[in-house]
Length: 219
Image (tube, helix red, strand yellow):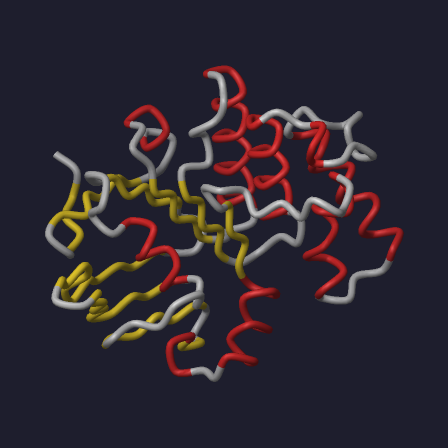
């Protein structure tokens, strides 16, 4: 599902990722932990094709994202990837339902299918009655749940989640983690979660530690 080979990323004189290797199989959910500033979010951005590595390859379902031009990489990302951003990236001028629906619009799904799937995901994250609300009417935890629903709505091949439970109470966090794991495993997708939370990491099949630019197994 995902193969990361020899990934290098530098910022000025600092090497953040130093020949990093990662393999994620279909249906596998991998958690990555590490100290603040270790490069976890940078790694997710590179996997998603939101940034370019200085060296190395990122291959999703046999497609090398790092070798594509910007337009092809954007189209591939829309179709194959779901990303839960740490800062939500909810569009303020769209309703909750419209925000969740947007990935389906971009890949050309029919309206009836969009409406059914959006309601399914909003209900799954406990926001079934908030579809008509505007983002300004939501709490931080509710915004995070909208971001999770949007990332999953188009049934992506690869789900990437950057601290998806950071703004949630324990019960809601567990609901979101269960939903992420179910979506990944039941559809034989792949999933990569980066988190500071050991409890969140334990929801994954495998835990890795990002340390000095490379991944190692969790002790």
